Image 1 (cartoon, rainbow, N blue to C red):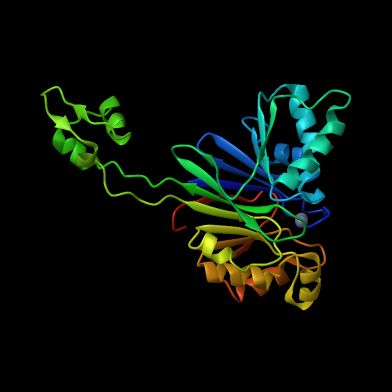
Image 2 (spheres, rainbow, N blue to C red):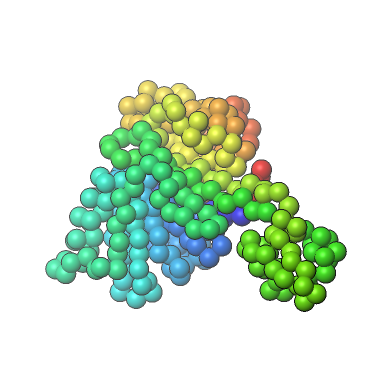
Length: 305
Ligand SMILES: [Zn+2]
Ligand SMILES: [Zn+2]
């Protein structure tokens, strides 16, 4: 299961109800922040997530409404020493801007060595046994904009009845089998993982895109994702503005979700110029399984749900 919490869901400037773009993705004991608009550290506290284990930040692109909060957040984290290492992942252009921002934060001292910058290129940017994150380029405004997919590793279910039938006691033997190792029972019988594990079941997949100007080619990349998060800054009535500023309308976001056959669509980067109901109605007319994200909304993402 992948968990997703929105910290900020506003476009360009904050509103009374919405902070600037930021979200946290959790998987097992890992936490990833995606984008860090101004005011994110207070949102993080209000969400109840806090600063603990927050040591990886992924940046979708270099615009200030997605990065300005890094100055305050990183300053707090380094001063409180709650953080040993912090990894910031972003496109080359975004990282260049973030470095200059943090130069000011730490001036006259250099940026501490505990902050690591990872330049994103398309493909896998992070992987453990249970999860991998893939980055894919998207078109918005300016260079080096990226979307991310969080992909849970398929798991083979442990078949308890088979284990019981073979006389495998609960405990470490079962764990070894789950980890793919064969074991020898007290009676000398050798049990292979295949004897007690079912066929692999796909894990959850979350596609998270920040700001987006064009959907062409994106559907193929994210096809079948359990959840798609993407911006919906404008309505169709203002599609000329959407095009001018490199953003999507709610209808365009919904068409992308439909084409990509994702299970659920969550819209974010919401403009103050519209009522939430208008945005939701425009998207749901095309893709009914659409949700409009609010700050602090929390989602549990499982395969096929
Ligand atoms: Zn933005
Ligand atoms: Zn932007």
